[in-house]
Length: 259
Image (cartoon, one colour):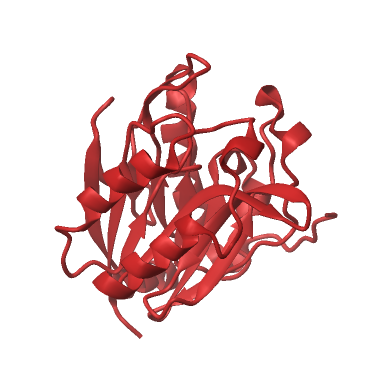
């Protein structure tokens, strides 16, 4: 088990439905990084939050996942982000987690954003995977999932909760508040990586990406509309010590979900 986990999140002004330009941007930001354990990219990091999946959809053996594997191998780092995937004649908003070995794990977004019609074009997932990486248990979720604490509930004793998003500036206060709430109630580190800029639908995004500790305290953040990197090192022994001392997770309710 590795006690420390160095996290990097990349906040970007995504180019609409242009995987080539977006991948070039992220590669430029990733190349100088050293001694990083996990890189977290925004939701739909190759395209922006598009409801035109046929324009950008890829297969799991397509260019973007192959690019992620090359980055992971070259930098010996895990990398994750969501993109539009075509699988079994369905489109998914799929979070892909690539290990340094090239191993792939994935999560299909459970809660479709009905306000934008995401439910009409993307198939929802029904599994909540826990990624085991360097002795850390990581729960990867996507954007709108943040509003549903039952789905995010720490029944698996995970250590880190990931959220990648295209969360608009008009509701950015909810983004910041709910990220901290998820950290507090689940006594875990939380990573929230959002995008910036204006998309083709004239929705404005301000970023406000955050790294938060298990007591809901902000470790680091990026300013509004800032394009760049946020990073921090998480310490598992400190988190475990606080969990053992306070014991809040021992008192959580048991429940089952109807999927």
